[in-house]
Length: 188
Length: 188
DNA sequence: TCCATTATTGAATGTTCGTTCCAGAATTGG
DNA sequence: CCAATTCTGGAACGAACATTCAATAATGGA
Image (cartoon, rainbow over all chains, first blue to last red; front, side, top):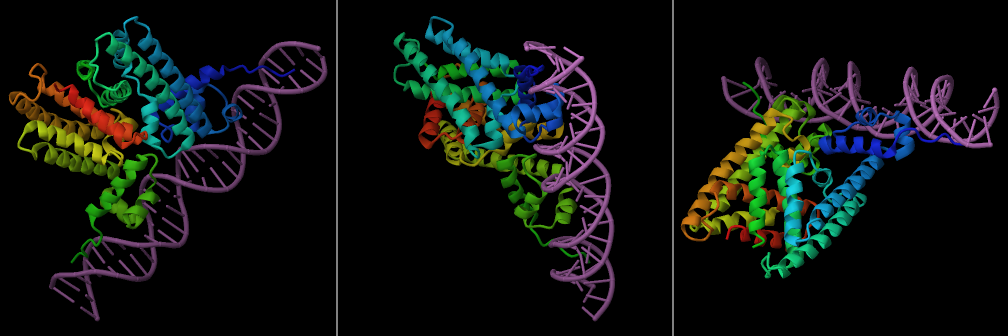
């Protein structure tokens, strides 16, 4: 019978994600990866295929994790507006850790269809969920009724990116908090 | 007497900027650079030192060019509010071309002091100019008076990044125009 | 204990990387 | 024409890259 895998694929993938978040695809070598993932070189190739496939798996997993965390914050509070605030608050709180989604878009733009498909799927899921919550907040009178919910959803997603870029560039906590407050002025 | 340089350093640097904008530092090889700059390999090393110094010179030049273009748009219209709109409008119009400033921050974060100094200087210049124009627009009753001009300046700068990331990720013109409109709602 | 499988790691491959050396071509003022 | 300089590009260097090969170790149910 086959020897079971000893290393945890998920744990190894998390270590790869941490490296790609900080250094991107080109700035991360295969040997950095095997070191951080604590697996043998051959296991990396056996399990993930090659470095590019590992990168795509990392971006996919990262997108899943981030989407799940965004949705948890967004849909947690009963009041939709509080959910919107909670989601952006989580982004501010986590902003010290670079975003692999943004890093990947910066590094590759739309040059790779496989990668773009991952980003588009994650964005679509979030847009729908955000748009729904914006509509609820509008119905509750918490957000101005004269804005398209989907446009407001896009604005908030864009602002998530803005906060993360600002943090990566060195913005302090007060700076990020101010960005968050001002984003919500657009919702009035 | 020394033979004068034949190639145009500025023109060569512009070609390097174009490559670094699209591919970043690690994704751009020295041979890509000499090909695009149309200079010999030795000339690259004689003129710029090494690949990293060329990259820093590129980021510096790009920052100067962008700051100049931002200020021209910002300070062009007599009405301050119109200047703010013109500046963001220019960003939307140019958003198809990737931003070397954002790319550099994504790729390196704060890991290199030389690079961070370039970004900080450019950001400081823009913050002051934007803040001044925000104050003027507040005095003219075009912007809500209850927001710190510097915070509003930071918000607009962050939104410049947001628009650029969205474009790099595939957002169409309508998407970007909506982002621009919503950013100005925060100024009310 | 055996077997079939997975995991590890030394060694290797072919390629690319950034950079230097160097010889010859090109330039231009004197 | 000459001299001093810059520019080009072949060749090379040392290192690193992603990936493969192969031998051996480890695993765990039968």
